[in-house]
Length: 378
Image (cartoon, rainbow, N blue to C red; front, side):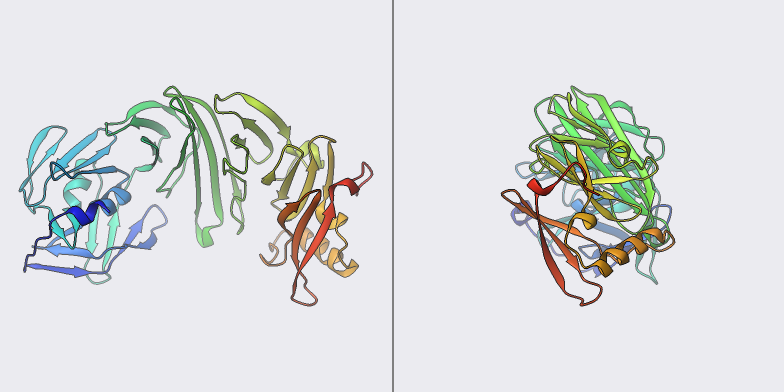
């Protein structure tokens, strides 16, 4: 909505083209939401797009008609129509001034990229921008975090400030652009990161970080291979306000102060220490896990400490049960995404699951009463 408050200007010596961005080690492509503005042979993009590509926080001051960009070791300000910008409070000459087009502030991409030591290339034939970017960034409720993908350096800023270094993470990512941030309180935040890279995006990396009073209190991460994504539940509402830390084999639930309120060795629950597990649903009474390698769904009753594979306790036809077991044994081919059991919802003591029958092709709804879960379940 802020862009609607900007006065528009018009310049004849400009053109606009739809473009893609080539990004990261594997040269992944994504299409820019807004067209690239070509002005005097230079590439300009909307302020928001520049921040998104280069991992910078952006701010527009309507009163002063001034744009600001914040990043690690960078504070830049510039104004529409001005031939100068301030980089870390030092005045710099712009070869192409920023312009307002259709209510959006277009700024010179290369000038900003060079200020953060990133390389930009423009291929006029393929209409593709090749952009280097060192940092992934994420923000929530006035707090922003930056992760240096190359060395794990982690930074934090509250409000519109240059970020401060707060530690080094163990996880390394290659193409991640955005961090998912939940500001839990005035002094604590929960940061999540996930990326899929490589051929067919088979290589997955997932991580979680707890920050309190500007310090890294806890980190967990894991990598895995396969077509399925990280399906762990991270929504604070679904977790009753707690946060999940998992490396795929262990899981801990923390409160907003960073205190561990529950801890599980997931391999102990199933007897399979070599598997990676996702936690897809959590209540005070039970958890629903997915065994990544087989894509089998698992029900664990937290209060009664009972574990059961869902396909073994549901009234599936014998042929369907056998099919699920056979598919799970074929580690060279993951199960079809439509041929797995999915948790639907809970109604009182009854859990509802969905399964698309291989025989009929129909999606059937199966009911299971938690009271029927026995210590001698398969």
